[in-house]
Image (cartoon, rainbow, N blue to C red; front, side, top):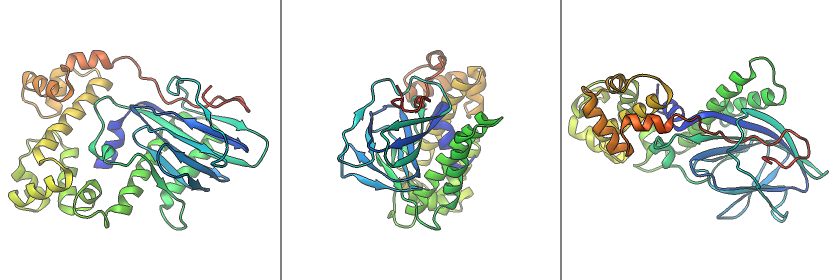
Amino acid sequence: MDVLSDVVALMRTGRPTSARISWRAPWGHRFPRLPGAACYQVVLRGSCWLIPDEGDPIPLSVGDVVFFPHGDAYALADDPATPLVPLGCDPLGEPRLFASAGFGGTGAETVTLCCGYRLARGGTHPILASLPSVIHLPATLGRHPELRAAVDLLSGEIADPRPGADTVVSSLLDTLQLYILRAWFGDRGDVCGHTGWAAALADPVVSRALDAIHRDPSHRWTVESLGAHAGLSRAGFARRFTTLVGRPPLAYLTWWRLSVAARLLRESDASVATVAERVGYGSEFAFGNAFKREHGLSPGRYRRESCPAPETFASPAVRVGAHPLS
């Protein structure tokens, strides 16, 4: 798997969920801060305003995508002056994968696609941590056509569910997340200066090393072998990798191995010894010590505490006219 694919696979726990919402003016809804979650909104029809907790309101139009990677609070409304209705329930309390809903008055219609998911405990990739609180990807003719195509497919599946819709919707939500990240970092790869993940992903040397680490974390990589794989001397590679990624190559390798191990403990029944071997540790004892330093728990305790099925991001109520998420 490449880096962005791994980021999406690692950061989500449980199923993503989504809702296609029809809003009719006047309407205004406040979404609370959701620690340990991420969500995004896509405008499918009409227009509206994004009202972040900090900063000025932002006009949104058809095709605009807004991503909240850290679960920050925000509001959507037909007009910045419309009173906002706060959420009155736990937005992570309902396990539906997708739904449709209606809300608001009798005026002009805006249709949005609302999606969200829980983040794996302790598994947030530095790429996600590096993102701003709000990412707005405006619909621009000719830009990111694959993102627009994924939005169209997802909207159609939710509006008219057919056999196999659960699998299709879940896959499309992951696909849409990848396209959002690809669009964001792609837009910044040439203008980000000399540091940061956009630069790291765009840099041919560092990206080759990252790809090698992600494709084979159990390999006995050294700084020298990673540098040779990437086509640079040991010292030059170490400096370049550390500058762009923010941590030395072997420190990142260790972090990634233990993140993969945490996912295996959560999602598989492999023994601790097997997990240790899969991520490149020669002994269960060494793996246990390293895992506890990173995650604060022994592998066995981490697995026990992660066993309960996590809640997923709630879909709005299906009743037309009902308050979403109520």
